[in-house]
Image (cartoon, rainbow, N blue to C red; front, side, top):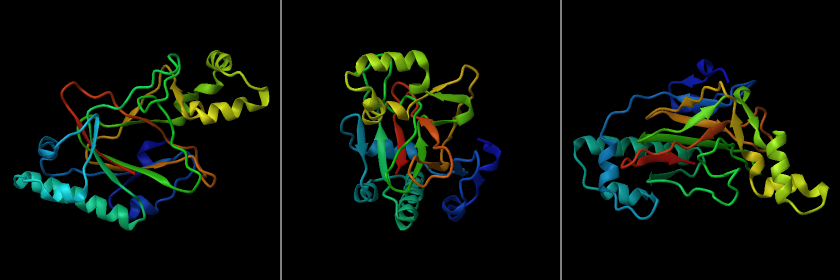
Length: 226
């Protein structure tokens, strides 16, 4: 992915610029004002991931800087909903880890792609905390095609040979990638709104490989995603 060719300066261009060739991620670069950490501090958190509804966000007692941050988030939610997306605002302490297959975790901390049966894109923005990363497709390998990993997965599978590929898909193994030793993941940064290509039947480019960051102890994330 030629990262230098995927930056735009407004929402209209973010949603209208086509993915083409190796370009499977578009970024609306922004330097946001306001205190987003205050929103994280004021929200009543529940469990590892807390979803903030718009009504709750509007009702938070915030300082002037917190109010600026709130208006930015509400504007982002508004334009995404008008575009037909269903954005969710989360405060994330951490995601659940996948321990079902020790040599092949399929949680969001692993480099993976999103899949959909219908045409769609993934949008995300980190307002506070550690930001997600994307990985150029040319710097990775699909894990299920690596011989040693494939052999181990076959040991888990007990069906007919012709059902093995379906087994990989049903358990999401085929969505995960291994970074090359010299790979250079790209941080999505704070405040930027990204649009990522998803694996769906009409996708004309390789889906965008990405992962959630490992959160810093004591620092939660404020993330918009849809």
